[in-house]
Image 1 (cartoon, rainbow, N blue to C red):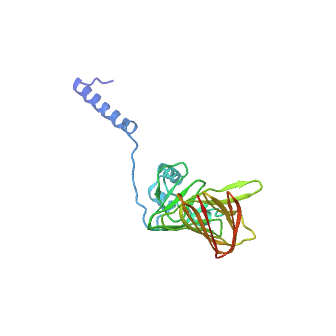
Image 2 (cartoon, rainbow, N blue to C red; image 1 turned 45 degrees about the vertical axis):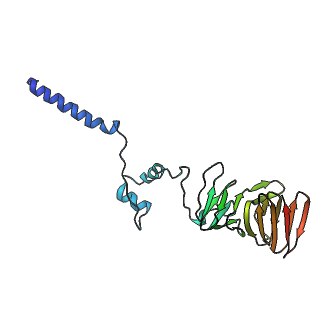
Image 3 (spheres, helix red, strand yellow; image 1 turned 120 degrees about the vertical axis):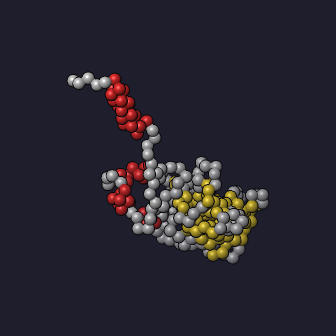
Length: 240
């Protein structure tokens, strides 16, 4: 083996040190990140073919972007959603916000939002919204109104899509269906009523009580004093 002069040995040691540092650099620093913008016509397949190393890499991209991170909104085609379960925030006009069950932060509402048990929707003074439950049941929130979606399922009662009015005014309506998947119930702090082929206006003032006006059909309202039939074109007021 040839013997290198001392100067060459120092040069070799320096070269080896630099080589090792370069080799180890990707390990000791954070992982590099790159960004591409989604352009018109882009698909998961085209982006994978154009930018990524292998067809299965898109699965990691989905995970890396935290699609299931709490607070993110995920858009899903309507034909993939079970509409008979849960409630849908069908329309949003003006200032409308929602609060998910267990959260303290109200967020701006968007049309098509799926509501789960305990979720709340609130319209501002210049806002309104439409909540749809089942296929034909709708609750229209007037301005300055708050409702909660509180479904239930019982052995004898079956499924109930219950909308509780905490304050403000709603117009609730439904069609009479022979093959109904769930009952539709409107609840206030003082009462509860089931709608079947009826339309009713309900107002709730936390300091005063609840008021009802039957616009179409006939309803039976359950109150602490018992059940009371309210025919079309009449109303009822229940004091707090």
